[in-house]
Length: 280
Image (cartoon, rainbow, N blue to C red; front, side):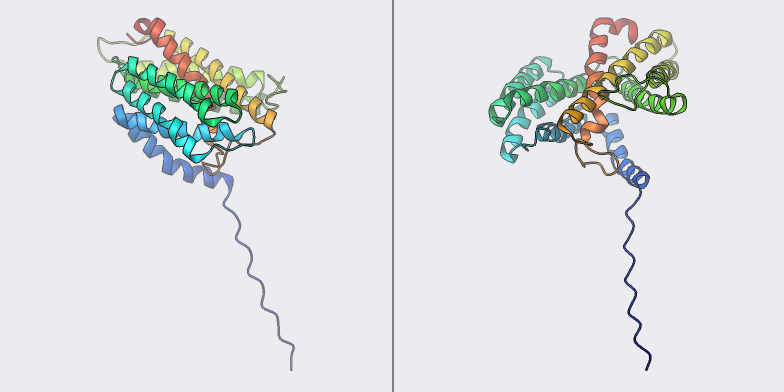
């Protein structure tokens, strides 16, 4: 009698590739983000609030001490109300509630209160600026589209030019892969994107200054890259690769929005100082 042939073990399933995960994540999240951007108002404010919630969780976990769920809910509520107030055009209420949020977070967190305070400003203020830009009386929808497109073009241009050209590193102690060529490529792509949006978004009798907006977009690219470097420095300091695993294939919320957290306040400041010239 021939010996029994042992059953062949089932081959383990191979995990989905990183590219597949990235595409799947984008397919789910992008329509939701676009819908909130298009609708604006309270819907966009709610999206910003949820993004802030997850970014704050990641920020508070960097030192290795996760936030308590109850405390996280308490300190998130003033920010949610602040974003809603800004969406309704009540900037005075929004700034007051943001101040409450900034003070409340380190008090409730207790562990590393200064770190919590830094996170409240680092994440809370840009979210408020984004909601303010979306509600801009000129064309908030187009302004936010311009900002998001410029930040995305900066990241894409920096990656492509850095890979193709290479050359001297920008700040290797913070990010060993970023180069001066990448920064230049990111600024170029941001300028082209900003100028193109100005030309395409202009209406008869309401032309946008495409050259000025292109130059300002290049400055936004530099600020966005600074935000990327800042988060990279924080991660290197604490010895972590990603801020979290919220978005499969992408990492955490901070990994995806680090450039925007610096770019949004800079864009809002530009609109306050030169809004009549940038977006007449």
